[in-house]
Length: 373
Image (cartoon, rainbow, N blue to C red; front, side, top):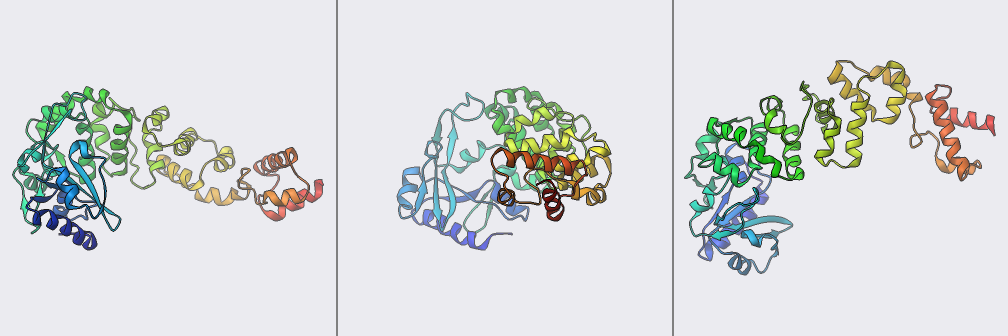
């Protein structure tokens, strides 16, 4: 089994302290799933029958965060590493399609497991590394199957986002989705309209970062409740750059990128790639001056099967914008270009370089400036 040994030592100390105070303690959720898949967990969650007030008292000598107390979670910090400790619980009714109105603490770990989303996320490991698996999640991992716990319709009505989480887990883990679970996903898909775009965007971005392209065709009707993307899904796996992947996926639907909350800079960069997808050769100098050449070469290479790297090498001496001029602003100021004149000379230099009347080299620019002074 794969662990971060440094993390493991701290983990066992946390569990041992809970146990020494008479409580149960298990690793639960994604960490156990990853261990069984021989992957290194990113973090570890611990569940216990200890109530939050008891957890706070037991770990009173450590830094902790109590922001999750409403849901029974206390986060303790050991050497800058956070560990979430959550009390076994039952959930009350889910009225908003995302969170239970109330949680009820329990002494039975099975109550806690039954309220989770999928069997592969409802497996326990005790301090002796023994797997505790009352819901059959380990077998589903062996079968590489994503299966809702209990009635999938109930699970998806409780938390609508679980529909997208199922697709995301399928993409990330290369699993299949259980037939009944998948049927419920399609039937309940319109419930996604009640979920915030921010939460759906987070799941969608994780899907794009995976290498499973088939999900975008198979689950188009589900994903389409949230976002529309190109009808023909380009195989973007040659690039690991999220901007290139999204440009290819949304090449016919650039306006939809606003739903992904990527930030102004990244959204602009992706939209620029899309805007220039049907470029003319004469436009390349200007295009390379506006967009990241490496990104555009990768984007066009995948989209059209063309290698623009040689073209770029031939014209890069004429590729420029005001920020990439081969002469510094302070040099221009020393030559007397200040205020409005500084802005005007920068624009003039860029215009001449893009027209290929001048190369973007320090020597060529200085020669030109001496001529016009």
